[in-house]
Amino acid sequence: MKTEMRLGVIILLCKVFLCGLAEESVCTPGFESELLVFKVQRDHLYKGKTLGRVNFNTCDGKTRILFQSDDKRFDVNMDGTVTLKRSLTLHEGYEVFTVHAWDANGKKHTVSIRVEYVDHLKGHQMDTVMNISSKMKPHFDDMILTFPKSSTGLKRAKRGWVIPPVNIPENSRGPFPMKLVQIKSDFALETQMVYSITGEGADQDPKGIFTIERLTGNLYVTQPLKREKKASYRLIVHATGLGVNIAEKPMEIVISVIDQNDNKPVFTQNPFNAKRGWVIPPVNIPENSRGPFPMKLVQIKSDFALETQMVYSITGEGADQDPKGIFTIERLSGNLMVTQPLDREKKASYRLVAHATGLGVNIAEKPMDIVIIVSDQNDNKPVFTQNPFNGSVHEAAEIGYEFMTVTATDADDPNEYNGIVSYAIVSQEPQLPKTNMFEINNSTGIIRVRELGMDRKQWPRYTLLIEAADMNGYGLSTNGTAVITVTDDSDKEPHFEQTSHKPVTEKKLLLTDEDDSG
Image 1: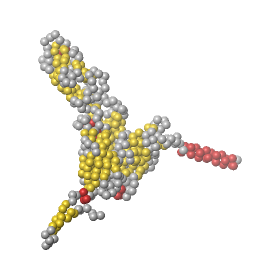
Image 2 (image 1 turned 120 degrees about the vertical axis):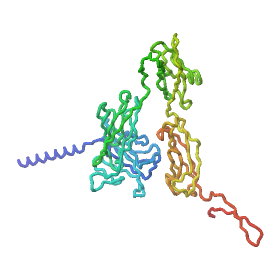
Image 3 (image 1 turned 90 degrees about the horizontal axis):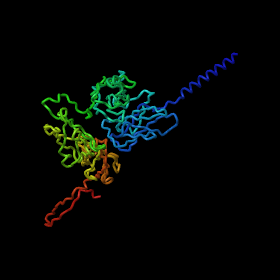
Image 4 (image 1 turned 180 degrees about the horizontal axis):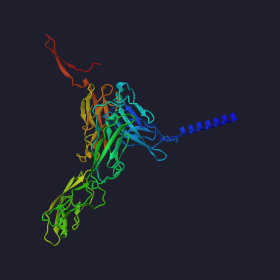
């Protein structure tokens, strides 16, 4: 009997043990970490550089997965390899972005990636990748600040939020959710921060209009906004340390909804008032509109129209003056129409004169000027003023020495982002003695020395592939070439030296050169 009981207990324990193993072996799809840190030795990274790799467990054995980066400068291959789609300078010493992947059930998973410049002179000999697992306590010994032993939190000087102004045009077409801005506490240099929002449009009515990614701080709007319904939203942003006792003082953010011309004018006074005038909203037309044409721009109306039928006509540029026929007006309704797509680069504005007279009665408005502004669209690539650019630099030039400039122009509006050109070095040939011997001022195109070690005898010439991109570096781009000739003292002009030998009256002219006789 005792033997049977012991055997039964053993069988029961085996079942419990096997059941526990089965429970522990259940696979949960997702990234292996919540945060990855890719450490690099240079603060200027060229297009195509491999930064590291993300690992996503699908639990079904698949090794090729579709990843999506929220930053268009970074590309993630199906094997998880993260590369640069364009050259990048880590001006603040780091960049943070997020990568998304979806499991077999359609659930979205996200990992934050931090690309961090580490000076190789401080003991780092190669680019590295650091995983901060969600199941382990993060280590931040390599960050800028460390945890003090005397406190549970990080000691801090006077710190603050890094928040750009937030403006949203109404009636945006998305796609949604649409990123507005990245909110960041400067504690993020020391530890992973978790962000959240409260207030109007978040957890208060109208709820759900704004959301924030908890690890990146990316603030999103989830739907088009209407300024006439609500002109601004007041949000409160919170930031706390992940697993550490750190919290920012809550920060207020005001989101302003920018007005668009989406409403007809409404009369606010008695039409029989002696003081009369035109009721004309401002007229703006985006260039390259696809129509259909003729396309209504605005309705022009005299407030005499409440008393009698008015007849409308227009004269001026684009009407009865060259370029003729671009604008027409419906004589009885006052609807102003454009008949074709406009090109801001050909003509940025048109000045029309509108006329209104009574039909069969002696009434006439004083003619009124209408200025039609053609809004710029980013439809022109930058163009280099020459190609190639040629310059020279002495092999002993010091770091920071500026020696040549490349320039590109953009036909788009120079006062808008569409026409602001940014420069970047894409590649350097030869890549010796270092891969980034030169750097370029993003705004001016001035090229200067970045590294020492130029040697005219070994590398007499460098060729740089330069990228010029509008929208301050994020729009349309074009490539050009800068050819740099390395010089040394041998490139100085030789000079003549006269010597004489007494008492000989004959004089000799000796030709000397400062080059090494070898």
